[in-house]
Image (tube, rainbow, N blue to C red; front, top):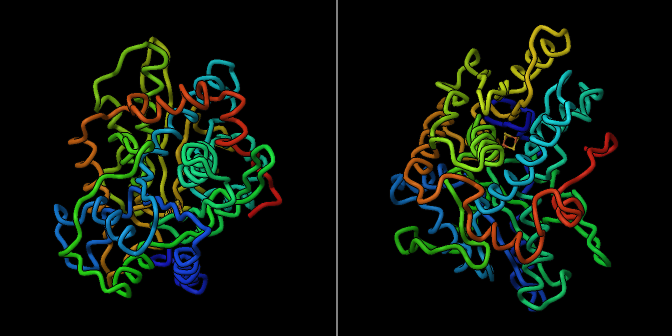
Length: 387
Ligand code: SF4
C-alpha cells in the first residue's frame, strides 16, 4: 500500500506539493478552492498537541483561509454525494442480478484500485464506477460551483488535504465536461504537508476559530464522516440503500456490525449479513492489502460469497493513511477511528440522503443519482492502463 507507517518503501514516494499551492494562491487569476478529508481532522492536532475538542475541521478551514485559500470545504459533503451515487449503483446492480457471482467493490481508495488492477484484473469490472469523494468534489467545484460563481472552470484551482499519499496519483483522473477538459483535483497535500504549511505561515493553532465550511456545499452528515475509517463506506451506503428500498430510515446504528473492533492483523476483515425487506445482503469490509488478498482468494475459489465488499489499503482505513502524522512505534488508527464514530454519533444528521446541500445540488444540477450528468462528472471507467 501507500502507508509509509507500514511500508518503508512508500517513504521514497512522498513529494511535497505545498509550493504549487503557494503559487496558486499568489496568482490573481486563480480561485483556490480547497477540501479537507474526514480522516485529517482526527490527526492534524497530534502535531500541535491539541485535544480532540480543540482539533476541529473548522480550524483547518480557518487556517486554509488565513493562508489565502479563497473557499474551503469539508470532503464530508462529497462523501455523502458518493454514497448517493454508489448506493444507487449497488441497488441497481444487486437487483439486476449482476452480483450473483461476484460482489461489487468500493472504488474510493487508490491504493486498492492499483492493487486490484495489477493483481486481479479479471475483477476490475466488479468495481463501483463511482469516483472517490475527493474526485467528485473536484468535479463539482469546477462545474456546479464555477457556475454559481459565474467563472470558467479554468480559473478554479482545486486543492485537497488528504490523509493519503496515493491520492496524489488519483488526482490524475480526468474531468471531461462539455468543452472543458482537465483534472478534477489540481494539487493534493497530505495531513503532514498541511501542518507544515500552517507552521511556515506562522499561524498559531490557539488563534484559529472553528469556522463553517463555505456554501453552497456546506452540509455533511455523520455517514459522510465515517468514510475515513474501515467499514465506514459500507455502513454509510447501507443506511442509504435501506432508505432507497423502504422509503424510511433504519435505526441509525443498524449496520454497525461492519465496524472493526480493532485494527491488528487478524481483525482486518469484518463480515456481516443484513436483512433488508426479506432480502439478505452479504457484506465484508477489509483493510490492509494482505487481508484484501486473503479475501479475494477466498472469493475466487468460491469459498465465500458477498454482494458488496469495501476495501481500504491502509490498516484501519484512511485514519491510518500514509499521509498522517507518524509516531514512532505507535499505531494511532484505532484511536482516530473512534473519533470519527464519536463525531457520527453526535452529528445532527446521520444519513447521506438527508444532506440538504447534496439534495439541493441534485435538484438544481444532477437531477438524480446515476443520471446522465452524474455519469459524466461523478463516475469513471476503470481503465487497466491507468495507475
Ligand atoms: Fe489512501 Fe485511505 Fe486508501 Fe490509505 S485507505 S491508500 S489513506 S484512500
